[in-house]
Image (cartoon, rainbow, N blue to C red):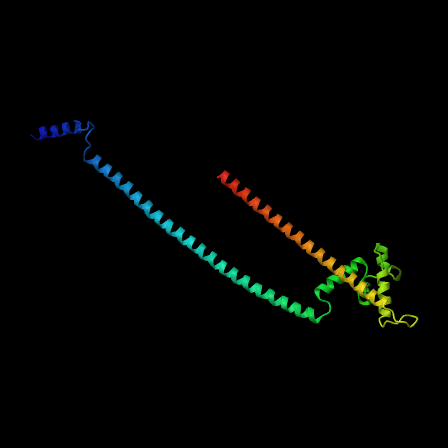
Length: 232
């Protein structure tokens, strides 16, 4: 009986059972293997989900920190700008007060410098002591100002200053000298107006150059962005 039962079992194992679908019906061990594979897949999926959640949390933290830093920087920049504006205003006020006190304000200095370049203003003794001597400047080829080079306008001015009282060499009063004074003042005013106009024109040119530079920079940035997008 035992032998027959063993034989039957062996035959059952050898015989292949077929499903309704036509495929071989798997035994107990095969079903367990499939179940283990499915559990592994599910476990991997769950682990990946948890990993992605952690990564997203860390990324959000980093982005939040960056955003806070930018906002802080913006606030600091605005505060600094306000402080700088206040400092500039204070500096300009101080400069104006000092300029009013002193004779050599900015406008006077610029006028004197222009006259010096044109050769109408003589150098003072202090400037001569600080600078180079006449001989050394002559050697370098710089034109040295002498009494012979004085302009006719200055001669007229000196003559008018000497005769300010209205008395001529003969002792007579001259109305012509007063007219010369008026003419000389007009010339001086015209020169100042011309200088101011030149300064305004120069400032306009500088502003135009700045605008052109800004436009060029914008064009370059646009080109770079296009190239990067094309490369991507």
